[in-house]
Length: 270
Image (cartoon, rainbow, N blue to C red; front, side, top):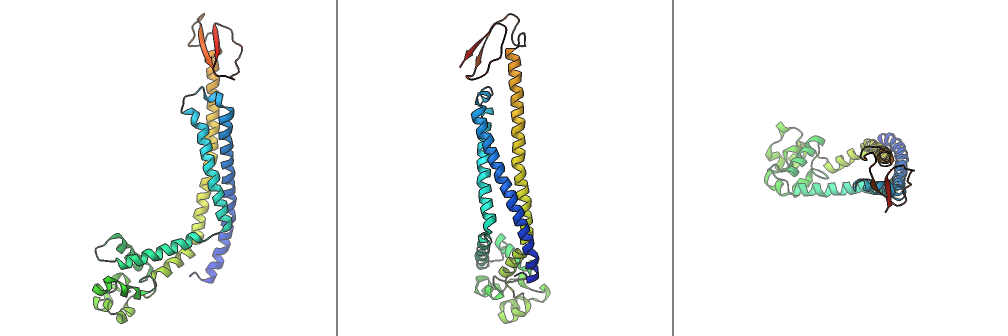
């Protein structure tokens, strides 16, 4: 477990980052509301304009509504989790790690499978042995055949197989502390780093709705220019596509405001 002084240093950092994270999560939630509102507004108010575009372009409002809904839900859960400050995820990780580490010890062998390699790496790196302590290996099948694994040895040059098969001798040759305690202590001592990474991810998530809003703004601007181009091509006398003195029938959506036009052009509302 982390030392009291380390905890005193970590707690203010966690509190500060938690407050900032809550602020950004709220902004993230508000941006979702904006996206949702823009999508609904585009679907209701700009339906007549989108009808002039192809089928793919008409899906833009639905994309905004879907993205806004997802952002609102994530923001809501984020605010709730940040305010509550629940540690159930950390407890779940601890429980799963202890259970999986016990299973890895039971299935440990010398065939260099990935679980056995992971156990060796943890024991060699953290200078630990077993789950709670080195005696956990005495209950495994591997111990009856080879003794305690060499990854528990303090000195590889002074750690024979005979010593590893004798628990009394092995106590002087191997690390006695369990790996579960050291791993969880390391996790607790690095919580400030985890909080900082979470803060960075939150900042990135906040920027995503801003980018989506900018893309929406550009899309609407392009749509406006497209409509102006359509009007200039359809309703201006002598434009490309209409020969001088020719006649053409233009289908116009219902509710579309028609400008005054001179020339042999007939309108059909529908």
